[in-house]
Amino acid sequence: MAGTFVDDGGAGARKDRVVDHGTTPRGLNVQFPSSQTFGGDNVYTSIDDLARWDRNFSSATVGTAAMMARMASRPTLANGDTIPYAFGLRVDTYRGLRTGLRGGHPAGMQAWFMRFPDQEFTVATLCNSDNLEAFRFSEGVADLYLASVMTPVSAWPAAPAAVTMKPEELQRYSGIYRSVDDPWDRLPIEVKNGELGEVLFDDDADETFFPMTPAGGDRFFELGTTGNVGIFTFRTPADGAPLRVELSWNGRPADVMERVPDAAVWHPSPAALLEYSGTWFNADLDSGGFR
Image (tube, rainbow, N blue to C red):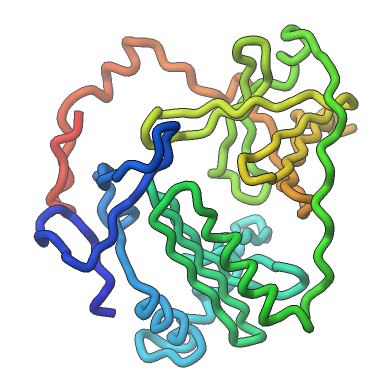
């Protein structure tokens, strides 16, 4: 995989590396990598190398067949539950077929790797503009080639009719929600300027607020810039467990997230934050200097 490398700033320029592009009201602009996370980020590859990586799952030349099988298996937790995030892949289904997925979305780029192990079919998509949705291109190619063995496509749901809610009514839904399947995946939902919405991390602006429109009956919806329809349904479990939100995009199975109790959310004081101030360095990675 000679076309795959980690850009740690010390290897010099790569002439064959494409540049990232971000979309703004004034058009496209070039975005240069700014992340200092080397290995977990700043990993570059090519379509040819992704094909080699894919081939190694079914015919292991690096590692063993047992190792590759484990990499594509759902891990078992101490309590016996399994989670969809495997060892580098997300084990899921798409239109009734088993898949192994891996995506990436640094600033100005998108990548999506979609493997169908039972059909021995894989699609890898690399985009160097943040207004392109790599996963949609991959799914479109898979739809063409595997249509005969896939379940029928469900029509995207229409957006519900909007209703009006007062800001004080919206506050009951605010909080930090944690995915039931992926507990490390957290979603802040807040009320800002009289609107309820998601607060998502953004590389350029630190965070971006996506407002949700009330639809009545503890339901809200979002309309994506490319026509996606997201439905957020809040439910209070009968056993008194924390409030949950079921998040479904385009009629797909919902991701269930549970609100984290306020007592479990750490709100550090200025004095507590001072304990973490200083200059940090990792001798093993030979990187640091962060404050």
